[in-house]
Image 1: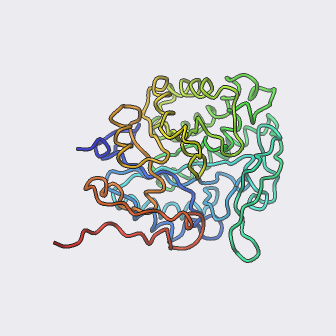
Image 2: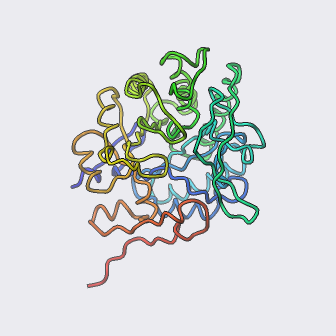
Image 3: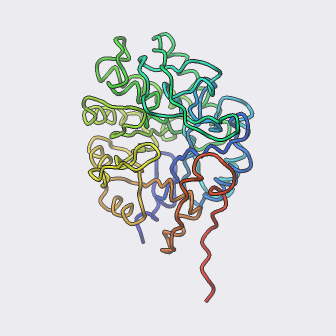
Amino acid sequence: MKTLLLPVSAGKLQLSHRVVMAPTTRMRTVKGGIPGELMIEYYRQRASQGGLLIAEATAVSPFANAYEDAPGIFTDEQQSGWQRLVEAVHARGSQIVLQLWHPGRQSLPELSAGRQPIAPSALIARDTYGVVKNPQGAYEGKLFPEPRALETSEIKGLMDELRQAALRAKAAGFDGVELHAANGYLPEQFLLDGSNQRTDNYGGSLENRARFLLESVETLNAVWGPGRVALRISPSGIYGDMHDSNPTATFRYLVEQLNPLELAYLHIIEPRIVGPDDRESGHYSEPVASRDLRAFYQGTIIAAGGFKPDNAESMLQQGDADLIAFGRLFTSNPDLPERIRHAFPLTAFNRDTFFGGDARGYTDFPAYSPLPL
């Protein structure tokens, strides 16, 4: 029996296998950031008995969005759409966690009620793009503008938004929530010294820079309790113009602080992936982030980032992670756990249909059907 197919617990989540669907932005909501029938079908197809799906990055505020047609969780209509999606997933015997997202300086005013983006400091995420529609209705990239540095007094309001999103996710029936603190989004913007030049209690020392992220986790724990809150990080991330003077020390410190918080899991993006793309340098061809942080974090680890079944299995057997999240492969193989179980061939994904569009390259990938003998 492959380790990938053995049961495992992740906090309060009791799973029959370790093949997790990673959160992948696909921009397929109906108007208003509401999950509709197309999204419901996509998630339903990928649900498996005893499996875990991590729903895509979902905006916690109407004033924070980087991608047109990305979902939200701040209106009754959005919550209702998610509830129907969760019910479809549960009917297939799977569990599902919602990834809560505030892009911070990566927000676009056009998608955020016209408001200037906010950030720890007024530093632009250079050479990074959000996605809007042009007058012809086609998606196109747009550079992010200069953000406004948050006042210390405003942070409580951000925590209130996060709390309300967590309450809505709970009411919609999710099995837990995952804070998106990777890929250059707001919690990571506070954590790294390349994006945080503050001089108050949320800047300067490593302890202060980690405060916003840790308070966010505590806010979610107050709603969900232990074992239902998770965190996603990218220790080698550069997406979103991110950098830190000592990322090794920063992330080792962070995960040590997470130990008492009783997360469901820590979700770590390996360095061979940068945002939606593979890192060009072959130097990071092997997964290393989970291996390094394992010594400092005592809980369950999900590793993500360009895995295929064979190297995912090796990662688990070496003990560097407990579960593996697959993104692109799950897009084109809705029955991925069963394909791994039976060594069925894998269908290649179509990158051209990842972001926005209709059913093509989204819900039209069939489950594997062996030819009759």
